[in-house]
Length: 230
Image 1 (cartoon, one colour):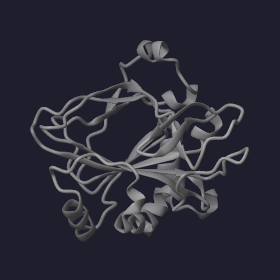
Image 2 (spheres, one colour; image 1 turned 60 degrees about the vertical axis):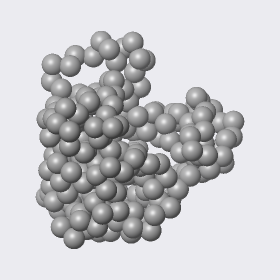
Image 3 (cartoon, helix red, strand yellow; image 1 turned 90 degrees about the vertical axis):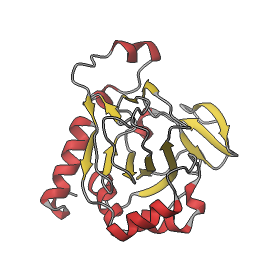
Image 4 (cartoon, one colour; image 1 turned 45 degrees about the vertical axis):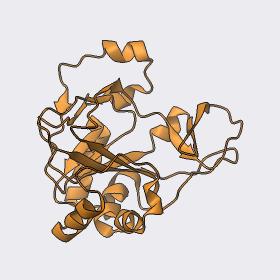
């Protein structure tokens, strides 16, 4: 894979593999950013299952997004989930330190290593084995500036390399090297699901709109299927 990557793509891949996350600037063209802001206005509520929207499917398949996913996961990556998050004065939450441990699947099957089944908005979710999560990547597209006052993501560099943490163990992780992921509008934060991360409530009264895309590069075992494949 390395020989087919540009210098910039190789740097993205290496930083994601080392730190577990990196920021890519100017991923969305100005007209695309404006169109998404109109579709997801400043007071829009958070939303699951975004692939019902043609605009999100087209954006996810666009070269500017695919080149990021392929740089990390290889040329056969595909999107498996899309979410919209928005922190507003009316819906302003904080998220404790955690890892993203669940995936969305078509239906439930008894399969070794898959646990903690649940249903959210009619979609089956499950915690897969670590090897599945280690092969995934999230791309978070910022529709607004993610500044210090509107609840930016904070990540613990390298924490994805230690696999899955118990909740009590996450509390004990050294947070002295935490990176606050400040990001301009139109940029993308690439991150591994197993990176330990958190976010605070916003204090500036500004929205923080993010379209969160998840990518994989492997099929699921034992008859399980990804809920979406874009």
